Image (cartoon, rainbow, N blue to C red; front, side, top):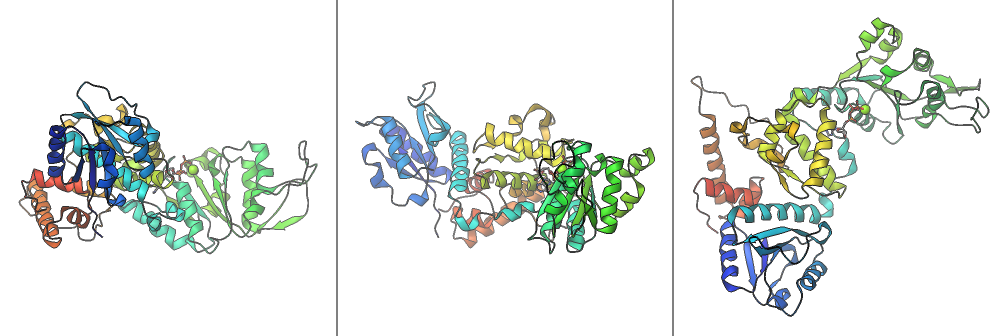
Length: 477
Ligand SMILES: Nc1ncnc2c1ncn2[C@@H]1O[C@H](COP(=O)(O)OP(=O)(O)OP(=O)(O)O)[C@@H](O)[C@H]1O
Ligand SMILES: [Mg+2]
């Protein structure tokens, strides 16, 4: 399928229209210039190919707002840019609900138009994703990352998922302990049964027992009905005891008993209930230290620690940051909460930050950026102060693999293990030569059609056009 992106330019001033047309042609879009704004619909043949509308001065009987409504009715997700002379405000206010993505100053300038088209591309992409490409919710259980540390975690998960062994997940806060627990459940034969998480640290000590084991009516003040506990709810499935390091010694004894005997009683009852539940526990605490301090039972530790999985901190696997950002953005898109992209410079800056809050901190940042820069491209300078690095010289020089990872083409490491020559090399030059060579091949393969070549290279058309310009390569179409 030919995916030529077109930009509809509605501009009744012929000089401005021509200028816009030539800049847009240069960028690699196919502008459709319409001077008679009242008849714009006649100029549009394929709605799917329309990427954006640029709305300038219209010598029309209609109000600008009426034309906007027509565009909106034609395609509610078609991004619109308002054109106005430098220093002059457009007469229509820009609000996020109306698909007006921004305003462009006249005379048109290359940088402004490129970034607008880039933004429009992200916007349309996220709104027009075909149903089949929508990712099933299950995929969000996946443990994203290509670092050795996370590969190792994935291997351990695979090894132990489909057994009934207790698993203890250790690691700093926000490293993905719950993600691992859900993965273990998902890849086990208990998958169709419940996964029941309990945050042992968040439930007050005296309530935890009834929360876990349930109670009989009248067992204590407030127990007005019989109540099922989490163990019963998880029957046949998995019980995730999160923050087990915060559990009182008294409760630890009770958990130990269920682990040993597979039976328990509801609070206030002497009837034993047999339990078939797989236990996964997690904590950010050092349990061996807690044992020494007398805060954690050694026998329970050995029961739980049959198969420990240690989650690496994010600072120890910065190479996963681009993939994680990609995943977190896709999650936002999937939940229809907008979208955002990060420039290689911004990613580079993040790779230098130490993330005390780990992946959770990164997830919060991405959410915040999606709100602050809807469908925009965030550069290093747009990041909140603490994530910004001051080593501006290296800013933006992140290897291309990182940029590619950002647009959803994760780099596989199998053919990326070339040997460094004994005398060293000029890496930058080498990468440029590689890049030029691949671009030439992609263009040759696709008969010089830039949009298709970009697809083969897993990059945006606008990125490829930018590279062609950088390397002084001729576009053939
Ligand atoms: N490898 C990963 N891939 C995708 N998302 C991840 C990954 N690791 C963590 N996350 C996301 O980061 C956030 C924190 O993960 P999670 O809740 O599993 O961490 P945690 O170790 O249990 O943290 P805490 O100790 O604060 O409870 C979640 O939004 C989770 O979806
Ligand atoms: Mg957690």
